[in-house]
Structure formats: structure tokens, C-alpha cells
Length: 369
Picture (cartoon, one colour):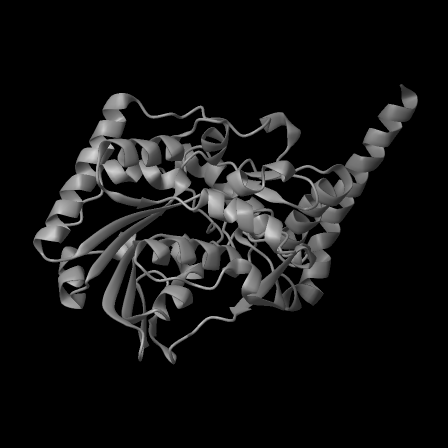
């Protein structure tokens, strides 16, 4: 008991010493350290005590002090690194640590990827019917304008690499939301729907590289190639199979999940960027590259049709492959989409792409907005 008490006293004393000395050290070295905030946000400003702010001053000042503590960012990274490398723990409630440095996204109010994995957020029959009705309405509108309409659902990373998931989540469910939607649309409508889960699982066994990032919630450019190939097959274009392409390793990569742990630099060793070669690029030219608005391409000598993709972030890893196979390709971020933009681009093919955890949005998205 005395040893435990002494240990606690030593820890408290060391912490107090760090806090006190940090102000002194910061005066000399602060200009050269901690120039970037791990959370990628502005720090809280120092509040003023007035009659109007009296009630919130205490909590506001606490936020200000926490954000402006000398060496705060380095201490956050140090704390997260100790949790991760020493105890195998995550300091973010939205990131789960799997085996072999695999990280998985767990935020329940952002698509609930764990609920998708475990099959606990299934759709009711009424919800599936609503999704089908809305998708048919979008398809009918596009067909009335002489355009093809295809839906692409990208599997969650957890579904492709369940073997690295934390044991507490168990095995992936046999029945889950994205599969419900896919099967309902295929069995009850004549909609064209692509869900390349089987293709991704097969490719995973054929290439030695990972097809999803370890430290990012997305697939990488190899996974993007497989997904793009499945979509283009539906559109009548055959891409070389994954076991006949050339994959080249590039720079180290640190993903969005590593960033959420404030360990971007520390986890750079876990991932690589890749490039895929061995398919006809048709003299591809990128004409616009704005992730949050539009990514567009022109490819001379490719399929003469014009492709328009209403997309989320996963389509960015498919962009060049899709762009290389059509004369003109437009990939519009869904949060900046407008019907006027689609009309201006005047595509022959319209694809609505969504990752698995957002597939429920198919019930409400309006192509005419």
C-alpha cells in the first residue's frame, strides 16, 4: 500500500513539474515546436469574464487552457503513442485497433460501420421498398433524358479485412444492410446495381499487397481498380484482370484513422501508396481536380460516351481508371451536386456511388435537386 501511494505521489509530482517547467521552456523553444494542431482545428480563444459570460466562463476557460497548454500537441501525441504502442489501446472513441496495425472506423453516428459489420442496423421491408422506389424514380428520370443509370455500392473496409478486426466484434454477419439493399434491388426491380464485394475478396487472395489502407478508412488504388473494373464491366468495358496488372509501390501513407489518433508520423510505416499499370489509359488528361467539388478527365480514343459519377470519397481512388475509359468523365462530390451541373455536363451515363455505411441515403437522395 505504501509503495502504491509513493508511486502516485511521484507521478503527480512529475506531472506538476512538467506543467510548471513547460511555461519556462516554451518561452525559449515554443516558436520552433508544435506549429500544427493534431485535431486540425483552431484552438479555443481566451474568454473574457463579463456579466454575460459568467455562467460559461469556467468551462470556456478550461477549453482555452487545454488548447493552449505549452507542448499540448506533443503531449497529445505522446499520450496517444503510449496508449497505442505500449498498451494496444486507442485514445479515440471512433477508432478501434485491430491486429498488425490495422485500424477501423467505429463512429456510430457516421454510418455506424460496426453496426454494418455485425448486421445490427438492418433495414425493414418498408425501408427497403422506400430505397427501391427512390432509385427507380432516379432511374426513370435519367432514362427519360436518354441516360443510363447505375448504382455502385462500395463495401466497407471491415467487410474486406475481417480477420484483422478486434476479437470483441466477432465474425462479420451473414446478413447486413448493404447486402439487403443489393438483393432487394436485384430481386424486385430491374435496376442496374454493382456491389463488388466478391470481386474484392477474390482479388485479395491474388495480390500480395493490401487492397485497403491499414491506417485509413478507405480502399487504396488497388482496391479502387477492382471496384472500377466491376463498374465498367456493367457498362460494357472489360479491364485487365487483377492478376495481369502491374502494381508499383510508392511513398509511405498515413491515413485518416492515424490522424484521428494524432499518430500520422508514427504510423507512416504501416501503409504504402500504390500505382497500377497495365491497362490502356487512352492518353488520359486530368481537366479538373477538386476533391470537394469536381474531378474530371478527357481521354482521346476512349469509349465515346460521357460518364457522370455522383460520388463520395471512395470514388477518388477509382477516378483515373474510370476517366481513362471514357472520352469525358465527371466525378461530382455528392455534397456539392446539383441537377443543373448534371445537365451542363450532359452525360450518357449517370452513376450513383456510395460506400456501404451510407447506402441508406439511397432512400432520400434526389437527383433533381
